[in-house]
Image (tube, rainbow, N blue to C red):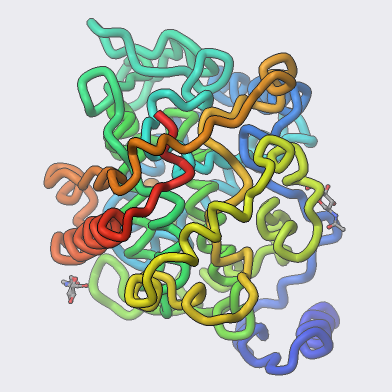
Length: 426
Ligand SMILES: *[C@@H]1O[C@H](CO)[C@@H](O)[C@H](O)[C@H]1NC(C)=O
Ligand SMILES: *[C@@H]1O[C@H](CO)[C@@H](O)[C@H](O)[C@H]1NC(C)=O
Ligand SMILES: [Cu+2]
């Protein structure tokens, strides 16, 4: 009980309304982590960090951990998607994989991929280049033949090579922009709102855009899965941190059977309750994200990126200059005159085409691309989810189409206002 009292004491000392930050009375006493690691965007990793990560992932594949995680995910598909379990299950599950990687190399920290930055032309992202996660599968077999998972042979659900089949015949159609995700962070008032807004937008779009194994329920076999889900987890963590008193333990909506979820629910394929994953920095959740660190005034992790982006605030300013009715509909926080909270702003920090810090030569000579003036008012509408995908995870079609309509309407509103996204460079 000592540690429980400590957690409570800390929460009270740091906040005015401690109630929301305090775990429910019947929750186990999760203690503050002694050591909190920082998950960084893949483009910020040094060569040593990337090599260590790559090596641990390779070993996990040789030892069939990749097959194991694919099996678990496939078995839990319906439980873990299209409902409130989405964020909580995947937080525990990605942490479990990160813990496996740490057995090979304790210094390894799971990176995330901010895929929104690449929304205009996902297939040109350096992240899908041969030095990193590799690109499209071979045109005959769809087997991935470059990058980290080049020529991987997997045994689940049957012997097969790791496959990718970009959904746009050789390329990937547009994803959801940093502008859209910024809007989701600002308009979502409940956990269930945020879950629907993220799962049905960038989450699904990345899975479907890459195709192959990523378009199945054993998608964790593709190493892209982990970086992509770390990104979704980051967005949840950021949203929680915007208003920690109300949101740290906010858990609402229903599960796959329609039952209202509870912090006491056991996370499937684990022996821990949901409450144990809600607060980063406690229990086994001994990690945070660089963007959250930066928002709290520690910009160390973001320094490399900001060197590439001379005026990160220009992007935010362009959105803030949108007409008031667009702001009040999509960006309620920007509509007020308050200072911008970096936690609810996905706009600055990375620029499209930015090389990986690990690629020292490319990073040294990189000149950030200017937004293409010809594309003013021509932001693309993000790709939509297929019926096959929605059915595969027992998703709610009405819910999916609602988010898609909002994404489409936002793009229309921005285009009508003559907006030029700083991420539109091609
Ligand atoms: C600041 O961020 C860096 C890099 O992510 C991290 O190593 C360091 O521990 C952080 N410092 C504090 C005081 O949190
Ligand atoms: C599906 O989503 C819609 C819109 O969010 C909601 O009103 C409806 O209750 C949901 N249906 C089920 C079966 O959960
Ligand atoms: Cu999943």
